[in-house]
Image 1: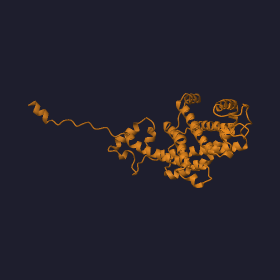
Image 2: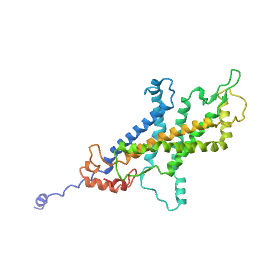
Image 3: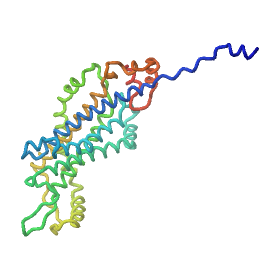
Length: 329
């Protein structure tokens, strides 16, 4: 009797499945936007690889399957892509707050993010400089070794050493600006524009910003090079003598920075800064767009439980998105 009554009572409803997480729908959108930023960065790399290439044959200089395309691929993967990855690792919305200036300095000095910023920019700048030196002609006299006359031994070229040092120094200057301007921050616009319009609006600032950075680097690098000059020359010369039959003299040559080298270093730093600024602008433009999918729907609307998915987004506290960013849905 009891068993028949228990069988007649309806069983409890199955537990309601949790709503799909907001990140499940947001991640593919962010991947597409990152891919578009990478595409813009690669276009900048291709243009600059053409600029530094030998243009004796215009067709081969612009042909994508030639040396220009090869250098563009190297520039992208070793000079632009690391900067974009750095932006992803430091991504946050809103200004960072510190109680005091001392606390801010302590946070930056003891942070792994700070050191990775310096190393990434220095390495990326050095890659560009090596491609620039590799693309130079013999008349530029920028090789590692300078061939003398038939009766002279080759000599170590300090112009090469200075430009190598200058590339690392430019990366350090860029890293300082990166930390000072907090380029890991995403500033959500008050008025949303299309990616094309937003990029066009910000692209106007690229020449002036790259020139100012280049002017700072080219003007201060000779003074920064002076204390390290004897050490760099001595140890590089000792190492080079094991591979080359160099001149026996170990005295320092005349200072390598003149008017010509200043203009060359200014141009080199300008190219590096312009390439990075274009990539950073593309990253900002695409990652600050509205959270819409390809069909124009918001991220939460694509879920079977829109309200529940939106709640999971509002509760999310892990990087790369914070509640303040997710709440724009």
